[in-house]
Length: 420
Image 1 (spheres, one colour):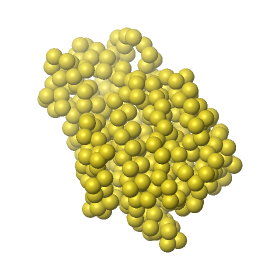
Image 2 (spheres, one colour; image 1 turned 90 degrees about the vertical axis):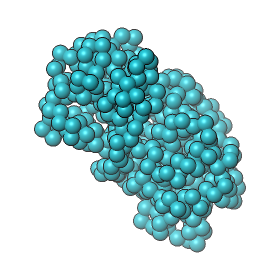
Image 3 (cartoon, one colour; image 1 turned 45 degrees about the horizontal axis):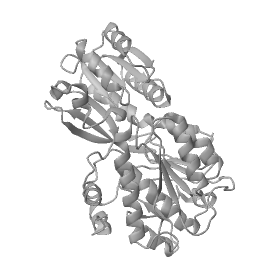
Image 4 (cartoon, one colour; image 1 turned 180 degrees about the horizontal axis):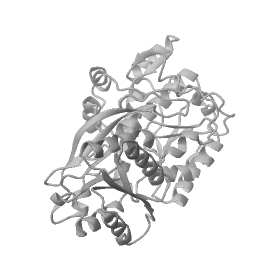
């Protein structure tokens, strides 16, 4: 279990205040052990281990740019502890545990106080012991695996991404709402896949749905014909594919086997939410994915934030986990302000308190002013209502239900709040 740490929440900020805060900026736990990383020199130094290459490379740009954007907003508001946050030190997770570990070591050797990332739950598990073991904060904006809730991290690991325990009920509700009574589930054989498969299976069965198949597969396989055949043999009315990039091959095989969205319900999760998925699955006819649905932590429910981020980084096309990343960086900065120190062993204890049970504020500048006045704050972020629990993660989350239209274009069906 985690050490008892004072922890808290991130909430959806008011659009008008966000707009005022960004203005013309769009150009460019308790019980934490004594910190070994970060020297408390008065300068908050950040690094990231995020996917610049590999299966989740499409998630890299929104997360990296949101990190840069948050740092700009913070620095334009006077920085942290009276000094600007230096340029973030970036390193690739690459979808490979060995690379992620080397990247984390590189950042730790550079003396960062906190690391944003990794993006994939499996990559975070590859680095969490070395990062938190050095007394450095690790803060992921996209890890959703249930594993982290009770992970023994000494009070140094946090996430703004909701646990799959919050996504699964929305996915199950969506499937049931579409009238499906027999559902097959396949998932990649890692912590992300197994955790979300188990949570979804339980949510479906609790709702009276028969799960015809609950199977994991090797995501490094080159052929997924057996996975598709097992789905077909289970005779489902709908199938859920919990995958990353390899899921496109599975869905291709399903379509070829007569199991496309035009014949059964096809559903995905956050790992498959991509504007390019339909083109990858069926380059000649992206519309063959029409009707597929899925769920993911909401990425575009705050229009003022989206507008400001796109002004800062006009080339961005994918926004997934961008708001959660912005909130991760901002929360770290506010915790350092509240602790009056960039020592991770001190500001880790303030990460949750700055986001709940205080006076509400929804920009770094506004929150910083309240802190200077000696007040406790409740930072309401840009990624939705995320009341952190003692485990250092959201106790509720805004989940998006997405779909693909008859041209294969990604669309948002709705968003809803899921509470633990």
